[in-house]
Length: 171
Ligand SMILES: CC(C)(COP(=O)(O)OP(=O)(O)OC[C@H]1O[C@@H](n2cnc3c(N)ncnc32)[C@H](O)[C@@H]1OP(=O)(O)O)[C@@H](O)C(=O)NCCC(=O)NCCS
Image (cartoon, rainbow, N blue to C red):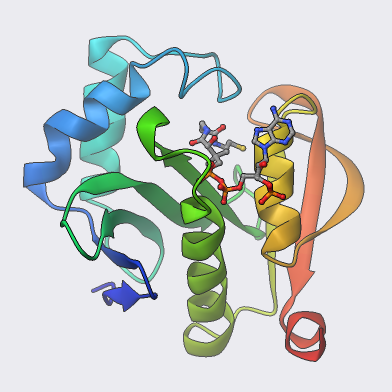
């Protein structure tokens, strides 16, 4: 069971069935999905993904990010295997009206701390489309560093980022 994680403004909790409609709408939104996978998903793809992440048991998976003050769903963050590699990646997506307020960075920092301190992961990585500048900023602000390029999810030359537990503690 994944624990609920808190920050100053946010609550990160395990995905629930009641999140389904909002999560499906997010992965069908062309703006949210502009730099993700093949872009906006169909209803069926979106339903499948939402069910898959709802059913992910164990310590990895998706956390729903809500605003502490209002309880509103702002977005999600995820810790999962990068493709079928041993590497654990961090990922995120937020609703468009929630962009630009530092929420993704705040949630990502908290999830990294959970991954390193509670799960004992030695390293957390991320990949991002070269043109996804906002995402690069989130990763850098959260303490990940560019390590060059990496192919993943059938895409070539994604920007590759990583943070090691010992380096992050020291920084
Ligand atoms: C990427 C995303 C999560 C960022 O969320 P957010 O809550 O707005 O992020 P933050 O506010 O924490 O930080 C965003 C940073 O990017 C910067 N930024 C945003 N758009 C930018 C742009 N077009 N060019 C340069 N910088 C940009 C912001 O200024 C901010 O940096 P700053 O704090 O140094 O000013 C959000 O845009 C999103 O959900 N995008 C769609 C899903 C996605 O692409 N996920 C990542 C897949 S790899």
